[in-house]
Length: 355
Image 1 (cartoon, rainbow, N blue to C red):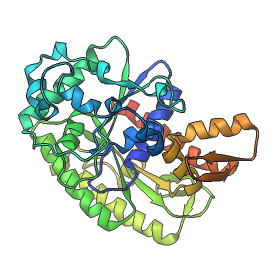
Image 2: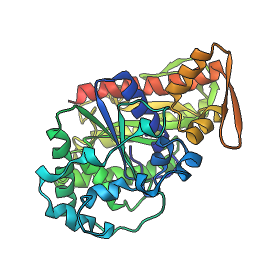
Image 3: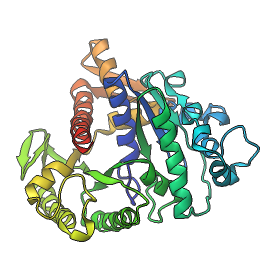
C-alpha cells in the first residue's frame, strides 16, 4: 500500500484488508510489515492508540530489530551493515513477528506483525545495491519457510520517498495505490509512478501497480450503479463522476505510454481504456465516522465489527473507547464492511490473475 500523499487511506485499507484476508484464509499465515515511520498500523493492530501506550517498548520497532539481526551486538542505527553481514540462510523473519491476537483479540489468530516504532526516526539513504540485498534476504526467508505466507506492507505518504518506502517497493510484487479523487493528488501520484517505473527499468524492483483506489469519494445515495466499465456500490455526485472520468483517462494514458510498459498489471499500449479502467481502478466511498473512528481507536477491523453486531442480535451497536462512545446502526456497520469486502474481492481476483 503506497502513495506519495499522506492521509489517503493506506493504513486503513492495509489494516482491514489484511485482517479480512486472514479471516478468509485461516490456513495461510498473513504477515504485515509496518514500514511507516511512526507506526500507525502497528498501533492499530495492537488495539488502538490508547492500548498501544500501555505496551512494553519491546513490542514496537521489530522492523529495526529484524533489520539489525536481533541478538547481534549492533546498534539499531547500524542495522544495514548488520543485515548485510548475515547470510540469507541466517535470517528468520518469522522470529521477529508478533502474533497480533496475543495483544489484540479482535485480530485473526493467523495474522503476524513486524512492527514499526512509535516515534519519528531518521534513517540514512540506502543505496540501490543495499536495498536489493536486504529485500532479497527477507523474501528468501519467507520463501524458505515451511508455512505459506501472504505479505502486506504499509508505507509512509512521503514524497522523498523514505528508504523504508523504497524497501517496501522491493519487497512487494504488487502495489495498491489509494488517493483522493483529485487532479492534484493524481499529479503527485504520477511522480510516484515515474519513480517506480525508473526503479523497474533499473532492475531494482519488479513491482507492478495492481489497483488505483479513488478513496473517500462522497456518496450522493446508496444506490449501486455502473459507470464506464466500473461497478460502483454507491452513486457519487455528478461532479465526482466527471472528475473520475478525467483522472481515469489520464491514468489510462500513462498505461498506454511505451515508456511505462509493464508498470500496471492490467493494461498496455493495445488495451482499450474501458478494459484498463475495469481491471485497474476501484472507487471507495467515504466511510462513516461512527464506524471508522472506533475501528481506529479499538484496533477492531470492520469484519470483526460486523461479527459482533450479528452475534448481539441488535439493530445497532455501541463501541466504547477510552473516553468516547460511538453508536452505529447495523446497516451503517454492514455498509462499511461491505465496501471493504468488495475491494478485497477485486484485489484477490486480480492477485490470482497476476500470478
